Amino acid sequence: MRKALAEVDPILVLYGVDPHTKVLRGDFQQENMIATLTTFFGVLGLLLAAVGLRASDVSALSEARHAGPS
Image (tube, rainbow, N blue to C red; front, side, top):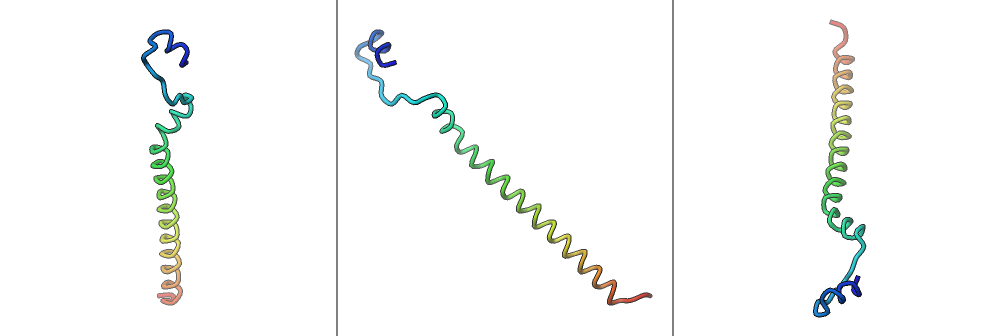
């Protein structure tokens, strides 16, 4: 790459040549982190909701057993 550029314009200097995959990985690093955090907090929210619903069911069942037949 440097040789081809030197043939076109010898004054231009080329620094830091990275592979395309490395450039793309760096471009999407922040988006990947946001997606990972969003997934984590979504799963955590679902887990907390499931635990809350289960506790609500257990509480309602316990109250029904203590109230006895009417």
